[in-house]
Length: 405
Image 1 (cartoon, rainbow, N blue to C red):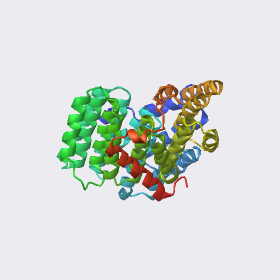
Image 2 (image 1 turned 60 degrees about the vertical axis):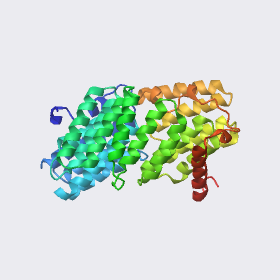
Image 3 (image 1 turned 30 degrees about the vertical axis):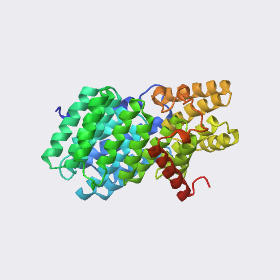
Image 4 (image 1 turned 90 degrees about the vertical axis):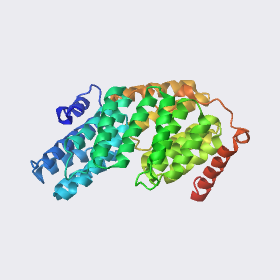
């Protein structure tokens, strides 16, 4: 295992700050992230001059967009540093991990890697071992998303060894899950599913984060790559029932809604996204649900409902990656509504936004040309009984929450 300290932690942030065409929002965010990471390193090694250093970094954080969820996380890290004391390190590193996940959601893999590197490079007491193991596993995920499969596998194996040494079964299984997801990413679907089944047999039902739910979610991803949408719904619903964490349940519910939409059962998809848009723990996921509702309205030819969702989203302070998703789905919606000129203009705007932020437009979830051609009418009657029961459960969930009433 290469020494994590040998990598240049701020390099990715420096590249982002100097990226040609980057707008002020992206630059402010990168500057704030870089300053906080450098301050964390000095804090852990005893070289931080609080409150002077904290005040300078806080000014950079406050210059970030108010709608950026990373703003609050970086602010919490600075508050922990200002309070001082080794007992604050665990909480600060937890916020750094959350910050890295936000960067992942924005497909900013090099920046997320650098944040996880801070956790790993400054690991050891009093930083919990499981935080280092999880940071390694998340790094492996970021590497896989960049096609760096061998490096990802090395990190997962190293994380597994650390977890076994610490008697951390949860960390060991999560590392094994990372190996399985690497197999899946490389197209080894049979081997990946076999490994996931083996992990599921060892996974405890009482872990604080549901390993079983993660494995079922992984098996659903394999099923999706095989084109088996019915199995995606079955496995994702099983994952939903196993998972106690609200934010993760929201993401699973989104996957279920998207699978029903692809089957052409848009009434059930609408139920799932209505629940998501009204009750999701994170604003990000509420917006994501509304984007899907906008697309479904266009697929159903309901121009007034489409316009209601479009107007709400257009005035929202969407973070860049989510705005990119919105523009892509908005273009698809206008094409469905018979307005190809507007769709073309929106796609051009999306490409320009992607270029400003260093995103790839092809990373969007549903591209304009990939909409399911199935008709909604009568689709419920064609569902297998087990999937029909899941559809009933999603409808009952929507009714119990009052979403869309």
